[in-house]
Length: 170
Image 1 (cartoon, rainbow, N blue to C red):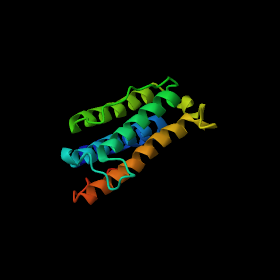
Image 2 (cartoon, rainbow, N blue to C red; image 1 turned 90 degrees about the vertical axis):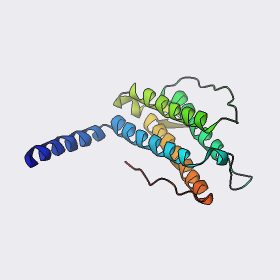
Image 3 (cartoon, one colour; image 1 turned 180 degrees about the horizontal axis):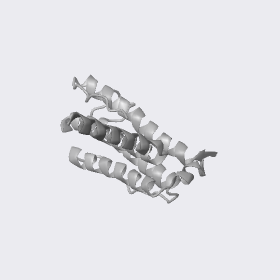
Image 4 (cartoon, rainbow, N blue to C red; image 1 turned 90 degrees about the horizontal axis):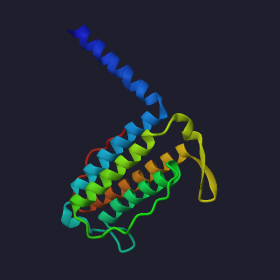
């Protein structure tokens, strides 16, 4: 039995290492973890605290989530898929459930766009803010932006006395 279990673990470990050796698969694995972690953070904040912001110059908790969502959709459409992105204005008074649904859907949209790519496309350059950037750099920007604002949301939870979910990395 121990030999069978060891063999299964070896095969699964090899598959996992292989999946991460491909940059698109590695991105997708990290992206799914990012999605799950951000959704956990968003779920931790009670709905009545979604309008909370630590100071007047900062976005509210819900505005942060919608900002993350819009940025990932804009960057993935305009620079990865090279499609025009125009979004009608969103109602700022969305429920927690509606906000979570829109956020999860945006993560899934990015995944679908990336799934259509091949590794060669990652090195293609696009003009971003008057500079050339590779599509891989844009994917990194999408992830970095989400991570940046997710960190702010963790602070918001702490300021409200809510223990944030434990960190989820790779």
